[in-house]
Structures are given as C-alpha cells and as structure tokens.
Image (tube, rainbow, N blue to C red):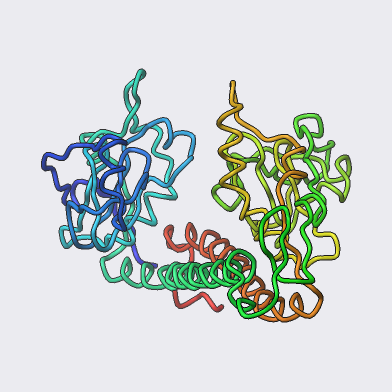
Length: 391
C-alpha cells in the first residue's frame, strides 16, 4: 500500500498574501450583482466587483464558526470572487492537488489551530502549520477526480433546479397574477381586483393546514431509541440536518410531527422562509409550520405561501420586539385566487412535473453528498483506493 507522508500545509500550497479590505453592508448593497463576496463566514453576498479570477481555495478564518462546524473550513472557488481580508486565498505550489486539500481540510478537526479569545480565528501562521498526511500527487489527483464526480453532479442538479424554479415562478405569475392566458376572456370584480370569471377568492388558510411544530427539547430520544434529527430554522435554511442538530423521539412526537422529503415547511418566526424540505426524516420544531394542502395540488399551496412571503416578512419586522413573527390571523387575511376545475387541470399538468423534478433532484443530491462523505475518510486514509470502489 502506498505510503502517506506528513507535511505542513505551508509546504504544499502558496498563500496569496496581499492587502484586501472588507466592504461594509452599505457598500455591498450598492454593488449588488452576480459575483460571490467571500469573507470570514464564507459567502455572505453577491456583488458586481471581483478581486480575482481563477481557481483557488478560499479558507475562512472565523474561529467560532469553524469550532462549531457551522461552515466548511475551505471552499474551492473557480471564477470571479471578491475576497476580503478575513479569508485566505490558497493555491497549489505544484506539490498538491488543491481539490484534494479542500476535501482533506473540510474533514479535519482544526480547533487546535484556532487562537484568540475575544475574536478566535485561524490566522495565517497557524494555517501554514497545519499537519497533513498526503499520498503522492498522482493519487491525490485520482481521489480528487473521483470525489469531484459527486460534487459536479450536485452542482448540475442545483443549476437545473434554479432553472426549474424560475420556470415555475414565471408560470405562476403568468396564470395567477397577470392572468395572461385569459386576457381575452371575461373578468369579474372581487376583493383582490379583476379575476377570470368563474374563479374565486379564498384565504391562504382555506387551501392548506398550517401545522405548528413542537418544543422538541421536551421530547428527547428514549433510552435505546434511535432518535430523529430536529428540523429548526437553521436546518431549514441550510437544507439539511447535520451532526450539531438536536435529536428527538419519534415515538413520543408521533407521525403528525415527523417531516419527510417533499413536505412544505414555512418558518413563521425569526427568519421567515418557505421551502420544500428534501433533507430526509426529522421532527418538526416549534416556530415552523408544515403546510398540508386541502384538496389542492402540492405546488399550489407552496407557490401561494411563497407569494405572500414578502408581505409576511414586512409584517414580522413591524411587530418585532425580540424576534419577529406572524400570527395565524395573517393566514386568513392573505388571499388566494382559485381557478375553475378546467383551468386548474391545465396549469397542474405544467406545474406538477416541474415541482416533482425539483424534489427528485434535491433528493439525489443529498444521497450523492452522503455517499461522498461516507467514502471520503476511507479514501483519504488510504484504507480504500479509487479502483476498489464500485458504484
């Protein structure tokens, strides 16, 4: 078996050390665009400017986030980025494959290299002193090539879903906001204005049940029981549970509060958002609604809840004392335009496949990421060779 040798990170990479400055949130708001802005906490915005164009490894220095594993240590960046001085830009010096270094750093516990109490961080001196066990450059490339297949497919799925989401939103707006397919037909006046004749206006609460989660700290797993991860706002935002997620007892909470792939989740407190969950089975925490359609298509409940989200966010901010939220009464006030049966069948034939494909792609990406993460430590240690793996 090939021998893995020990190196310091500074021996196998170059750290590009030139003066960079962070942009204030006000400055970033005036430069809103497509290029990622990367800092101490990873990608935090998108702006029009860029500080470099190429392929590098970006390493955040925020020690608190790294110790709590709220983010990956490193991210492979290809293309145009703005990187402020709270992150390191790293490139290979010819002795390493930068993709391999990225995978390796993200699976390592680097808490011992973080210094400082008031503002703990991974500074450059400690970064270069990180000890690594590396195989030959050729083996690094083979392993990185293999693992990149998973990541490349995940990226493709994400891009496909972005496009599908845009299509679904455009269709929804065309049919239910602008009524473009019916512009030559008859309209009638309602409380929300003119709508196609034969359609009706109901409340958001009339098309779906909004079921609040439980205070999951009261439902810890029983002795010997395999617990379920708890879905909180953090997990909803990142799209998955992780090792830091709390656990709950499936037997104590019951099926009503067990969430699975494809469920619509609405965070109504704190950070308001609406997402189709595809992170596997978990227990629904309080401050989150699971949205269960009442004899209406799944996409219909999702799109209408999402349609009202900006207004809900505005209401929550106006009422915020400690943590902004909305009350159930707002679901009754929010109006929905319901088409006649023939029109519903026509739009459903277009919307349902889009939403089904989005869910399918998200589930596939999660499974690919899980398989990648399972294989990664075995490949990095030399316990497995790329040629030994059959998929």
